[in-house]
Amino acid sequence: PRHVDIGESGILGRLQKAEAEACADPDLRSWLHLGAGLSFERAGESEAALGEYHAGLSGHVECPVAHGALRRIYRRTGDIEPLLASYGNQLEGENDPNRQAALRLQRVAVLHAKGEVAALEAEVEELLTLPNADLLPLASLGIICEAVQATTSALKLYTRAAELESLAPVVRAACLYQAGLLLEEVEDLEDLDAAVAAHERACSLVPGHVMAFEALERIHAGTEDSTALAAVFEGEAGAAEEDSVRAFYSLQAGEQYEAAGDPEAAARVYPAAL
Image (cartoon, rainbow, N blue to C red; front, side):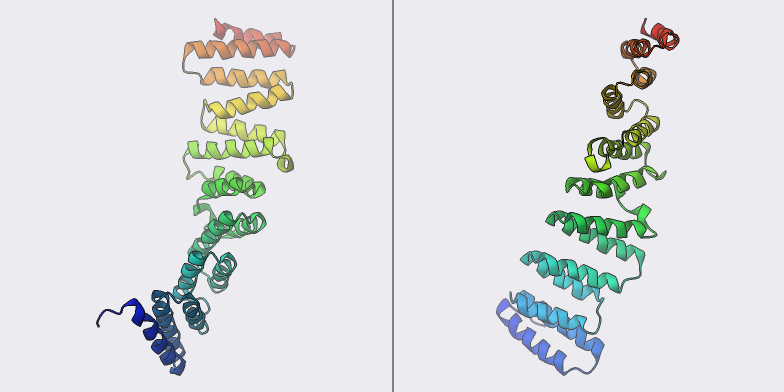
């Protein structure tokens, strides 16, 4: 067939629309409407294209081709609500967990861009119920949630990711560190004991995890717990690769043990400072 230019695309769309409306076969009618929509879209007639794509859905509500076409226009026009509705409508007829995950991840991206925190958190809850949830980029989702202050969801995602033995220890430790920061700094989540536990686990996964050790120092210094602070310094001394660094932290540990009234512990760590 010869090439159809933009001016002729609108004419072709009207012919295809008429053919679709006259077609008795519902499956063929849906595809004809989709073809008409594509012709209208090429002609720059977005409203007519939307009408045809919706008509194509009348017989196949979950049709991914029609939904994809609708979303292509909605992204271009910036119509966020119908864009989200399209994802929701397609999800209603979708039973495959992988395709469900793909659609929900796309909804998360839209909600993040729009700053819809409550809807984003609801979407994350749905994602975490999927049987393939542990295969999703949980840490990346946590970063997305944290960026829009959906901190409860971010904490759940970081915590879930940290439990996955399939992830590298450094990634799990990073998730634990981020979870610890949220527990330490976000008023609604504030739980210093849980924050300490998260940072300590990060240190156990990655010995010498500088940022987690610093967080533990900050927490214990703030609560004036000299014994706990001494244990952190002792841990940093144990993880140190250079003698001078090991000596520095051993000295710090000894001083804190003395401040805590534990001269025996101080005597145990001071020799490493020599």
